[in-house]
Image 1: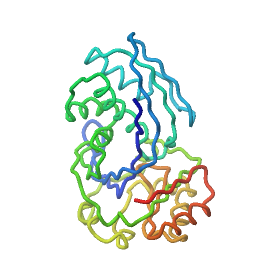
Image 2: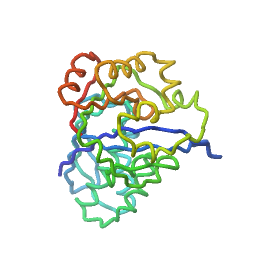
Image 3: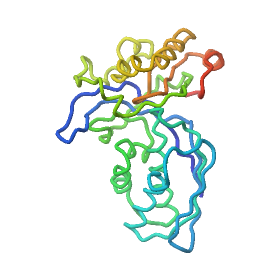
Image 4: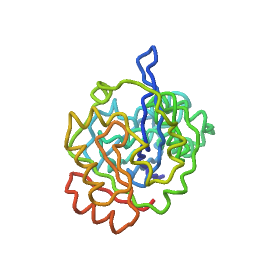
Length: 274
């Protein structure tokens, strides 16, 4: 069985508070995009999990790999057999695109189907939530408003985006979560994000913000410059995704987006019609 775990981008990201356990509360909109990894799982007769990867070099050991951790958790809960796993990594690391979270969620979905485990969507979400707060989003994989620590999800419709083209740029920079949060002062936005995203995309530039940008752009001016370049090359709206380092732009015309992608000479550039 083969599936294609997809990435996401954040439309706005406001840090609204901090919990007693140190986690921050936020509000954001998760938008699935077609950039994806490739994940193949074939059942084995034994309980062994054999893992082979290709594509981008993985930045973790097998013990910390979210695919393997998710598999072992479900195996412990259900007693399902082992498998041969072939994985092709295409979503860049340290990008704020949710690649690892998507891999974990899609692993759970596949195992549920492959071994006929009959786990409900809510049960799958509770399992993968332990891998990361945004993992449950990829179970439904529908544009969603996220609250709490990113795990309280409400489906949202964004019909105005269907005519836009997307460019994602990931420079050869990695941003740690600790670094991203170092300059954050939680605050409630003047206008709820759910209302802002209902407005025409042309109005987002002055209303829809990622709170991580101030800190990250100061520490890594190159990331901020990519956002500026996207606007210079015709983006209607541009923003960093998550805690970075990927930056994306929304363009009216496919041709303009493709031209911008050519002009921006970075380690990773991806284009898509929404």
